[in-house]
Length: 388
Image 1 (cartoon, one colour):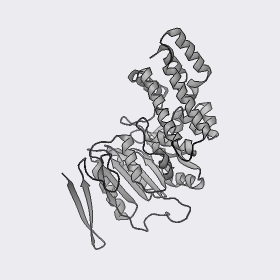
Image 2: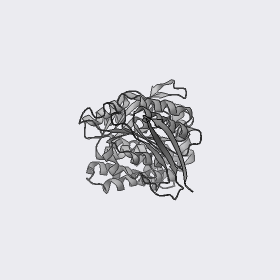
Image 3: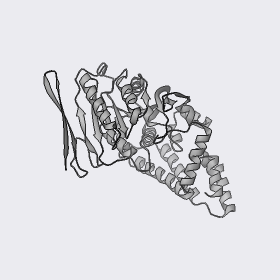
Image 4: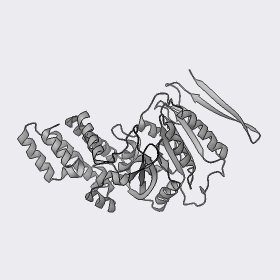
């Protein structure tokens, strides 16, 4: 069954019509690929002279926002308002809603109509009949954008007014930078400052700080991710390598790894996002030693050691396969580093069960610095010794 809902209103002496078309899961394609089982979509036109500054210079690239929602609640409106208040407005905003049932969809429709009525920006909305999950939902929103630069937006954060202008400026001024991300101010549910920034919470080691200073981000990403999607934007051409997103990766860390392999990363110290921490964060970030220890303990309890090592190896193998099959070719140094990371986890998967030979293997791996370059450091060593 196909459901159709329309809205009529009078503007400038003309009757305007917006229609929401809801297809069943097996429905045809409309405007974008619906093989991911989405329910399309409402696209609102925008007056040609509405986007401030957008065509002031031939060097300026068009900017768009890919945002996902799922029962955003009261956090949604401040995020939408902060996007509409940018000093450099995005040309296109795509919001993919993953089956919200708390009024989020209705608020999105009202906001989209307001943006069109005021001539602020073009807005496209998707509503998924069956939930896709975070990664596939973002993939849908990203692929629907047609802009040169793509910003990632969460449903519950707040952007500073100059965020788009600052990050787009970095990408425009350096063609080799494929992805740029910034620091963020961590706030609580009420929007109050937690007292720590995102980069402080990440706790970069001295070695990682040196790698950042040298621009060697791929070395870090072979161990862990530093890029939080809501703080990031990237060039459209990155999608030639990054799409489709693989199942074992989160969208932001995958984009970061692909960008670092193919080009350069810009890591801005400016706090351009208020990154909200609350009880329903899909990912979030631990801000204290206790919360970090709790997260690690939960991971150990939920995922047996052998399963975890296979998972890590599989992720690296997926990245390796994508990079080795890409064109133009990826740097041989980066591919070699990725191979070393895979070998680290392969060796650990083959450690013997008996205590003494296992300890010998752990010590050997420690001396090769595998734990610190590619894994959890001392915590990973301890886990291998006690075999949990």
